Each structure stands twice: as C-alpha cells, then as structure tokens.
Image 1 (cartoon, rainbow, N blue to C red):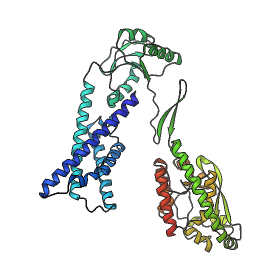
Image 2: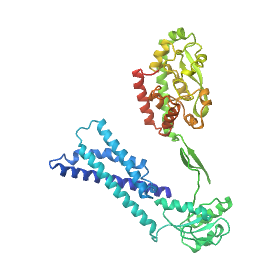
Image 3: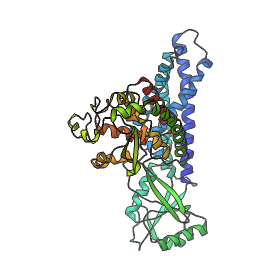
Image 4: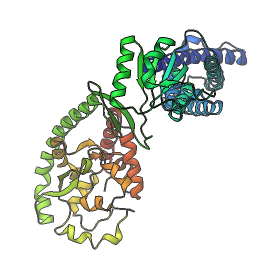
Length: 471
C-alpha cells in the first residue's frame, strides 16, 4: 500500500508537471507574440516542441528527486533541486535544437519558455509544499491511525521519516514497548506508551487503529503473536527494517519464501531481461566477429608467423568478472620474448598506476602495428565473447599482475564482464593516462549501463576502427 501511494504520488506529480509545462509554453507563446507586435507563427506550428519538452523536463525532474516527497521537506532543498533540473533540461533542449539545426524555431520563444516554465514550476512546487505542510498539521477524521511497537528512542526514527515523506502521513496514537512499559506519557515528540507488546489485543479493542508498525527488533515468537493478532482483526502490520546507507548501489527486497525475504545490495545491473538481451547481442556480434577473424587470419597469418617467429595467436591469462581467470586470445603483434622485454620497458610506461601502455612500443612488429591501428589484433577475442568470458562492451580485462596491485576501490571495475571495447578504449587509450581515471570511466559505465549505452559505444568504436586511430 505504501509503495502504491508513492507510485500514485509520482504519477500525480508527473501529470501536474506536464500540465504546467504546457501552460508555460502557451504563456511564453502569447508573451512573445505580444512583444513582437506582428503576426507570429501559429501555435500549431510550434506545438510539436511539447513532444520534446515534456519528456526532457519530466526526466530531469525525476533525476533530481522532485518526484519523491522528501524533496518537499525544505524550501532550500526544493529550490536547489528545481534550479538544477531546469538548467539541465534547458541545456538539453537548446542542444537538441542546435544539433538538429532547427533554424525555424524562434530562439526568443525558447528563452522565454525557460523563464516562464521555471516560474510556473516553482509556483506549483511551493503550492504543493504548502498543501503538504497543511496536511501534516491538520487532523482529519479519515487520516490513518498508527500504533507503534517500539522502544522510545527507536520511535524517533519512524517519526522523522513520517515527517519527511508525505506518503507516510498518519496519526500515531501511541506505542507499545517490547519490554515492560516505563510509564512514559509522551512529550509531543515521542508518542505515549500505552503498554507492552503483549497488550496489543487490549489496545486494539480500546482504540481506533488502522495499522501497526513494528520499529524495534523483536523475538520471532513475539512477532508471530503480533502478526496473528493483526491478521485476525484485519489490521495492516508493517515492519521498519534499517540497513546501512550504501555509498554505492541500491537495496532491493525480494520475497524468498513464506515469511522470508532477501535484502540485496546491488551495485551492478540486475535486470534479467536486459542482461539476457545483452548476452544475445554478444553472441550475435561474436558470430559476425569470428567470420572477420577468419578472413584476417588467412590474410595475416604467414606474415605474423614470419615476423614474430612464433604462433599466430597470443594467449595470456587475464582476470574477468569478480576475479575469474580466463585465457585471452589476440593476434601476436610483438616479437619473440616480448613478455621478458616488458620489464626493461617499465620505466617508459605512459600510464600512471597498475597498468602498462606504451604508444611506440619497440616490441611491436610492422604487421602488428598495422593490425593495432585498426584494432584488428583483438579479433580473436570474439572467441572469448562467444564463450561468455567477455562481452562486446565492458571494462578492460587486466592481467593478474595488475590486479595484484589494485587498491580496494579498484576492485569494482571487475564486477562486470570485461569487454572488447568500453568508455576508456573509446576515449583514446593515449588520452587517459592515469589509472584512477580509467577506474572512473569503468565505474561510470557500470553505474549507467543500458543496452542503448552499449549500442552507442559499439557504433562509436566501429567509427574509430574505420578511422584507424588506434595504437
């Protein structure tokens, strides 16, 4: 029910915002028409912009938390969120007009809309905040009556949440303590103690109670008695479970079995359907890539074997998802004994941190240089993708020596499958020389992963390969 109320609140806010944006656009159109004092283009010719404006603004307002009741707890926080959302939305709108070269759109109209929409949205948000404040202070007959089962100190947490989130608004009629009551009579901030938890049946007979909220940890036997009492009377029972606030990731609750729930802290994508689609794309891309690998092998194998004096394929142990070891395949582009020569070149490493990269590496053969320019040396890795050890898009697969030097926050880049390409490879291996920046790019990919992001990275990688600016 609480989740449904929050969802309904978000939907109502979105509808109000959409209506406010339409009214803002109409007001801006009228203002510009009066200002120019001549026949202005008809409103119908500009109405299509609303199909662009509304999704952009709703997405930005949601991203900055304006669809949660906590955003309306303070005026300063509300203004800050609204200014940020308006700035980003306006920037996206003007950028889209520039990129699509929409020269027929009045810039004055767009600028006027930005000012008017901010004023209208601010007025709407503060009107909503005033209504919520009034609703919190008023005591209507139909407001839900809540009985807490909690120690007095633990009850403060629930009361703070109830004051912050409009969807939790209710009248706390009192509380029952897990142990013997201490005679607390309530002081305006903490509700009156009406008895012990075992007194719940008597309290329910004597008072109007719509729901019981268990805030403190209770023994299983006590929870069973409370739940039986509530279910027999048809009264809603809730439990407030507190977990540490994560620095990264989001908590999810899952029904595991009857009376058992799993709380999961997810820091990587968990949507099963989207991950399945990513795997399907990986397999399809790997099948096509292996065809290209076959042609490249026939074309370059003899030259590579002659220049390197070794097998055409180079095999190396790499570290994959969550520390899994696998054998990575590449075309051999370096001379014999390249691994031994790496120690001598350590002082010329162009990267800062536990990663080795050298643009003009003397170990690379002439044919190897040609392959690297267009990243053709990585074609055998499509076999790793097909086997499920890698993905088309992901983080760079490190060596075991590199991971041995990782700090704790570096480990997070191993939480997803490594990829043939990614944000670091796309930004230009030579452009990002600090390993900390590499980690930031990898974590940015993990935090913002979507199928659309993968498609964009693949498309940009193909363009990069066609330009031949790799090394």
